[in-house]
Image (cartoon, rainbow, N blue to C red; front, side, top):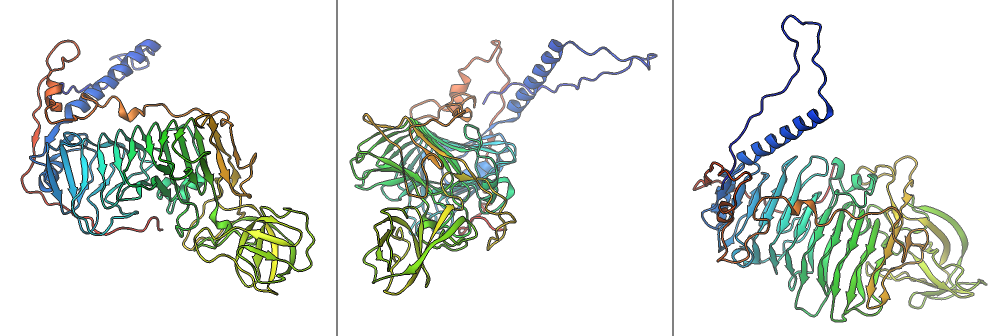
Length: 567
């Protein structure tokens, strides 16, 4: 790889002339200062380029790739040549490098790790890392490498300046998932084939602002339109099986953006603060400018179970009409570990009531109970909560003069049921912990968690949906009764003051020639392509030789999978 000669700039400083101890040199004009700053910036940039180099792995084998990484320094590019290799141990990366294959279908890594991860990558503070130009295939892993460990796992930070780019690669039916925890960066121009695994990408922000369980992410401002997200853009999500799959699953305070992708028979999803135990739910999500296509398997194109979402400018076809993006809160139906259920009496929520107490006149039928002595107005209790004194609750979907119908358990357990004579009461959950359309609040800590003084002090931050079309039919949010229109969400309404983050993502640009990785075996290598470019000014730069990888490095293994969060 050709690089310019390193230049070291001598520091500029003002000093007194000899014999003029009380005199100061005049302050330079603004344009002089600007020129000096520009020159200094260029010198530092050239110095960085001069120090960076390319380390060529001898083959695609795990030992050769690990050797190349061991020989590399932060800022270097480690290239993997064309070929197919089966890895049986974990590759650990702890440096800010670019790990670059020769392209999809050219450099192929097969996963045959039977315990732990295929790649375990911890990002370096203040620096950019990148993985590009590799096709990943299954190589015989027996047990699925599910989240939170996954097959390919990247750990980062939102506070130390580390960034990551995963691009121009293919994830081809592996027996497990890629996982990104507290990663700021972009996943772009990849193909995810999902005939084997239900979910393409898992996103967590469990360590946001140095906290655990996603608690830090919930305290922090949302920041829509900023760089402080993991961006998933310009990818192709596809499969051939006759089913629907997930583009994403996410929780632990997750913050991510799904934009400009092509999505076939799949949807964007996450978990709320409920079924994941102590770990909090999704915090913030943007879904826009995607092209959804399907074969009429269902009408569900996405949803959020907690936090705030912006859903706009998506084009949908091949889903039941009309498709929906759902907003749900399963704590309205079931009591979960750590948080309990939103039953109208839980201290994690804002409640009122009871508004009625009485007894069941007969055994419940399905999800309907008849109440003794009642004489109500039709549907006056919609959105309220019915509680059975002996245990169990659900939110009310409708009522007649003397019957109440309520929601099922959402698949988390047996539906609420009553026997004749059971005592019951009606409450109202005004605001539930971390529900869609709510955010912020005081910092929660500990396991089990304890409500901080003054809780629940979360605030309403509405979800917005606009300009999503299935043909000519608008596509919007579908919600449960207690997630209220005009308060927790707005359909056909752009978010006031919102501007999306710059597209394409800045990490996809300015990374040096060639920008995109080689797509076939006959194309020139990056080294050859770079040789053919004339440097600025027409003068040949001095050549800096690529490092040769050591032959037999020690390859560390990362075994097992961890629990997200923890104090």
